[in-house]
Length: 459
Image (cartoon, rainbow, N blue to C red; front, side):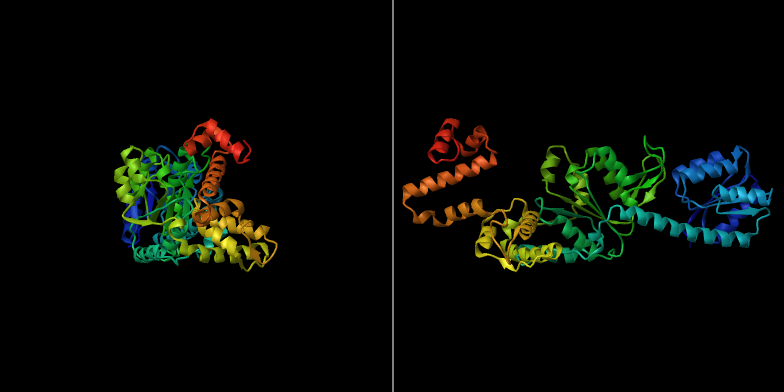
């Protein structure tokens, strides 16, 4: 049975009933009204796929209403019908955007062919339109296979095992982990392993867009919904039709929008801004955050009911410092990637560089490692990356030396070296502000000044 909704606007009762009965028997959902006022109410509250519009109506002119339809609902095909057929009328209607023009009495078989053809062409037009809108959200990388999946460590192997288990389901997934751990990479992998892999993968960072704009981006809007809305625009829930919608930094979503997202998850329906029409959702929702949502719930910053809707499946990605087995294979992967990008031929890491990487705590996780390797490839003068190329030279050298060799020094010298290293680190964290550095070290500013002078650290 066909699912398209057809709207007939015809004031002659007999003609209206003939058209309605015929099209219903052909399997369409048909709504029939006798005037423009009733038609406007239906258009505001229902999704209509095609309109049959009479030329003359008791409360207005069909031709004028056609102009309104083409302005507010440009993708809905309109077939004009009239008892006053003429070539002039037909040309006028077509110029104003009518799909076709039929004279009364309507030939029902001709009407059926026109309806089927109009719906097929309208479907293609909508697909092209949605594709153009989707392309605004897709970079070139979105059309490539997901890359950067490195799972040498038991922790990441466990993550990939879970991804394989849940990818085939439609359940919402919440990905948690520190910034830079690769949450988006896992989201893409979930999509590519799912039955929806041929559909779009649409992503948005909830923290990067103001609240008012975020609502419009997610749900779309109708023309005139707010100042500046000069034409209707589909939201991401529509653009992700048949695919996956990835909401990154979900913890930054305002409470007002959280309520609307909860409704989508409960009912699988939503409305564009400025519209009363219910639209159906057909997608897989994946969310991610680097925040503690349970703490946010206690602080009344995140809805508990939404949390349980999103957290049907939780995938936690451990920080890079807890999976050091992945550092070397990730580094090799990034070296190869940036060799191609910059036309370099770096072969390997020096022993000092590798040691520095393993000693580094990577607060920026995989993203930081990638950035350091890219920096190194750009700066490298030979086939070997040095720790200086990676920007880990002096700081990491000192930290590594302190940690490994301190026990081999005389006590007094060991204390002095450790103290000097700690003071340098605190001054770097405090960006040279002595009061702040003293607080980090747990000493007075006066004592810090003395130590800086003692060790020749620019006091």
